[in-house]
Length: 176
Ligand SMILES: CC(C)(COP(=O)(O)OP(=O)(O)OC[C@H]1O[C@@H](n2cnc3c(N)ncnc32)[C@H](O)[C@@H]1OP(=O)(O)O)[C@@H](O)C(=O)NCCC(=O)NCCS
Image (cartoon, rainbow, N blue to C red; front, top):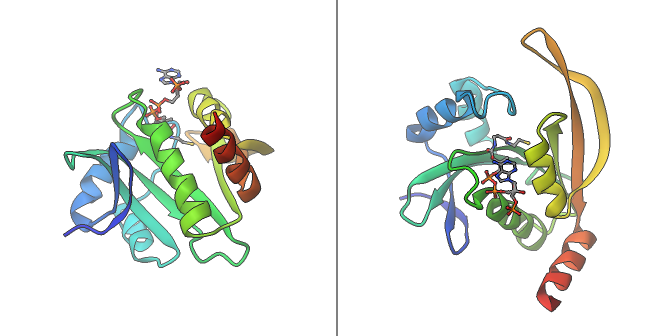
């Protein structure tokens, strides 16, 4: 039996098991994802899966077919600041990324009652930046050339949404 973390109409977020690790590793190494996310070893993923501060999640559709994975950290953070550390959707441009963000915001602010949800995104990842902004995230910083990869330095934006922004935004959506 899988441990379900959250659900929506079309997605199920369940905890990753060891049997999922080939899927996770092949997803983050796939050429369409690899430039945008950090690559970990199997051992690093296993360590994260055992960390009580982290949700290591497989994103499934309602037929229990994996469409991506993600890592959420900071579940016990003293500053009530939750990090969306990794997000990969393999079934792209079907609305899953947006739906996952909505579930993660609900989880962060309603279930975990955290104050802040943040993430980093690479400077050239315009698709993800646009998606995050449209879901209420604000750019709050730019870390210049802080990732070294393939002999290049990459800059990243830090983006976040706060509790009060989430509830205001949800109110607006409810009121239409
Ligand atoms: C970025 C990512 C998570 C988005 O998930 P997705 O399921 O593909 O995105 P969605 O289908 O929910 O689309 C979200 C928005 O992206 C934009 N978008 C969708 N497909 C696009 C495309 N081919 N090109 C540019 N923008 C596109 C649209 O603005 C869309 O908004 P809409 O609902 O108004 O149409 C996913 O593409 C992915 O895993 N990319 C590789 C890894 C990555 O970048 N991870 C994030 C690291 S910070």
